[in-house]
Image (tube, rainbow, N blue to C red; front, side):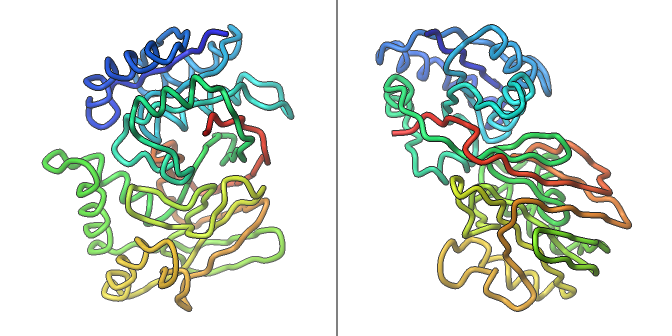
Length: 300
């Protein structure tokens, strides 16, 4: 069947557009029959993915970064009847961080990527949603999306250093919210600095905000905590970059929990992102769900 490749040329600050001819060449070299649709505005990838499902394309490929992946998956899920698996899904990694690809231990080399797409082998990955917005890898409220908002405004830094600088600036400014959290077998009411909900472990290219998350275990993994001191938060920052022993989730003021459902209510609003894209700048309530084994992911 014919693949639909949905390109977001803006990914990695227009580097995706520059690199896409290399990706096209690799797909052709590996015998992939495909058509290309180019996103022309914010949210257009969602519309293109919805149409690709309705038109019967298989597989559907996101060419871009994690935000593009999130948009395409959201569009695919919107156009797929409830309870059914989505069409086979693949990624041409053209983003800055490529977190989902890293979490899946897949290559970023474009020729190797084309080989995976050509082989057509899939593994059923979990799919998640927040307030009806589907996502593949990660979502958050509090500190993490504030970092996302700030890094979007930084033009003088590129790549991963932009995320790190934004994180330092966010910690310097200080952030906290009063929240009520409820999950499968627990609840919490009080101040929070962050809540990060992961299908995968890594986000932002550097940070393992839910270091024990598993894309195939049928569970959401979320971390939350309140850190009043800026100095204390600054001390935790390097530990968010550790995926194993020594992670920030080992500290008493941070909690990591597995659940199938999470609800959050806030007194003051916070921005929220899904797969790195801000979808709500003034969120007060959120409902998080997981749909086990609903996304056939093209993998080695």
